[in-house]
Amino acid sequence: MKFTHALATLLLITCSAPAFAQVPTTEEEQPSTFTLPGVAEDNPLMQDEEFVAPLNDIIENTSIRERRVLAYENLREADIMWKKRIWRVIDVNEKINLPFQNPERPLISILLEAAQSGDLRVFDPIGGDNFSMLMDDKTLTSMAGGVDSVRVMNPETYEEEIVLEERIFDPSSVLRYRIQEMWFFDKESSTMKVRILGIAPMIQETTESSARTIERPMFWVYYPEARQLLANESAFAYGNDAANRSWEDVFEYRFFNSYITKASNVLDQRIDRPERSGREQLRESERIKQEIFNYEQDLWSY
Image (cartoon, rainbow, N blue to C red; front, side, top):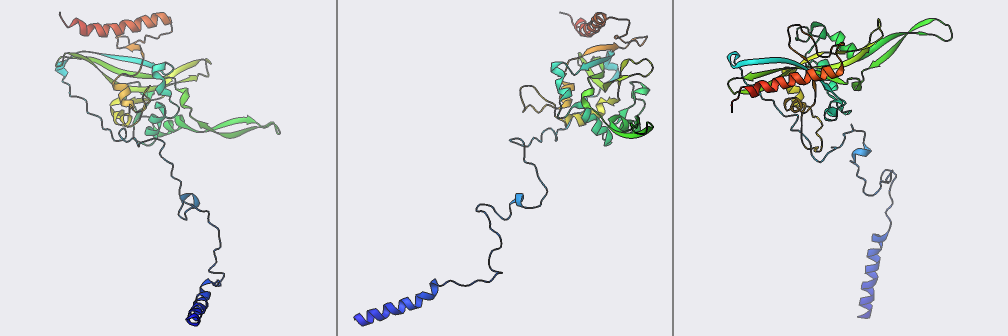
């Protein structure tokens, strides 16, 4: 029995010895690189793929981009018993108007991008503010930027040379917007209503003849055509980033402050004439605003 047990043990050791021997490997089978634990071979950071920015929010806001505006109600000429055309100015430096100069995406950038891409028609102020003359592409391109040829003096040869300088439009240079709107009384609903007709960003420039600064409109945008575009662009809402306020909401719900600079009159005169002082202009502006308010109130009897 002892001999049989010893022989069985010897055979077991002899048979299991090759299992613990090291198996030689060739160079093709040996790993060429060392991979850190936890780093997968399909890691996008380790591959030459197009970079995709992560979502800088907790959700993807799509309600603004998918919004569709409702068409204006049909009006009958017989129901409009009173109307008055008003021009007013929005000063972007006022606190309630600060969204107009939001550095991330100001209103002027939205209008210029849409005009250059052909999604929005803009009208030349040379033809007045009645939307009668479209602005040509050359004027629009030069207004939004471009290249200027400037004459400079060469310090070495003391000769004039023409140098090309890139001109980049600064959105912060637009400090005011001019609004044209129509106030009217609808006899069918017995209410006073208002509809915006046009928006014009204002820029300041210095005249070469008198060397004084004047303000003029860059272009006019026909607001009814721009409603859908403005409805798909977000506007900053104070106190609530989830408000989903669009630029169409800003104009339709009057989330801005402004003052009247002109009302339709027989002489086509503006309120902000040079011969009038600032106090007189403000009084006339408030008088017209009160006149519109009183007209609706005077139609009611108590």
